[in-house]
Image 1 (tube, rainbow, N blue to C red):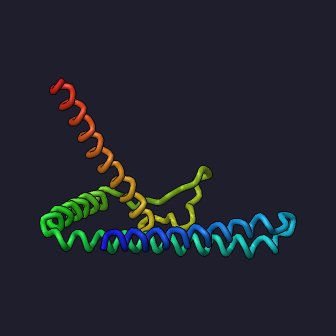
Image 2 (cartoon, rainbow, N blue to C red; image 1 turned 120 degrees about the horizontal axis):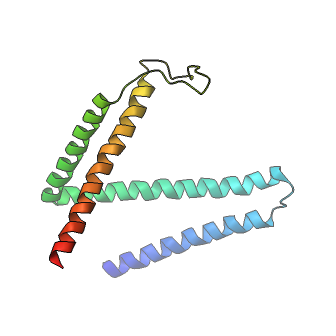
Length: 151
């Protein structure tokens, strides 16, 4: 079974590589001076790449969820981690402000009015990044100190 799956995956990868090579060669066969003629092949390879990206993301999410549901212990740890990230997000949301956003000439920027939800969420993102950075930095320092003590 495992050997058959490996063969199928190798064939699938080869087909993707041949299609990608064909689309790439079409770009080089097109006259570079003619922008309209170049739009077709470039658009095709971009569409193909986008489709592959969506497929890879979908497969990753589905297989990750499948692995989580097969192992309830990991599911508990994952849900605890997501809940903890949610708590940090709520904390960051309440730390953020929604004050007016001004440019260098003291004019209010479009969408930057006081009380704007965009201002609130941008501030939340900043505080969220700071909080997660502090946690990551503290774990880094802890691991560094733990390594120094062991030596």
